[in-house]
Length: 330
Image (cartoon, rainbow, N blue to C red; front, side):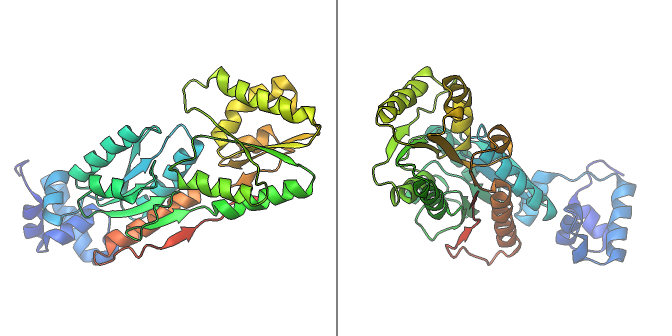
């Protein structure tokens, strides 16, 4: 048999539709009888047919691929949510392709432009902006989309988020009740990122006079970031008040860990640390400190389940629903 055999030939020889052969190739055997599946398998084996993904996409209008756009894969959050998303997509016979925006808006813009030009069936997006129009201008093709870890304040897409405001407020209340009168919040730039904005607002309901240090997103981590914290801490210690360090991201806390060791901060009873944590790493390093544990794996898995259902039901449209996967303080 010629090596130029096509999916049309396989369908004709099996006496089934092209769509049925496509389902077989995608592993959707539950959508056909065992007899039909066995017949298609026998023909493919006898003809040495190799599926052509591009041709199959033209026929079925589906690629079986979902673009997963992460804000920065240097963050454990991004790698963990991708693991969760890809594991669920695999169960739905969909493949996940990871795009890294590297915390750069221009990089995200390039990613979205590329996705718009391809035949992705869906997209899970962790954007670097809170402006929905930015996304709409770049992705003009009607692609099933779920927003993750951000709020674009737009009902065009469903979104999956953490209870950022409530979790930050709960943690702040705990430390306030334990006589921590000063708080130093350490974050990457807050403007334009809904996640950080909500966390900061939750803290400010308890500590109106937050001392905010916005860290430059540099690689490698710069010495000037330590100096900012050290100078502010000295001012607080002069007054003899108990001070809390509140990190809005796990990676920032890990970057400061060696600094805290050197400065003896971890042994000072008048100082404490908390953070939004994504993995067990922080708990292993700081077992005596209370953290806000979020579940990026479950966030990604939830987003993937939503997008997979939208892809399987072509008539399904986003209702702009917000799905909350709560973080827990303790």
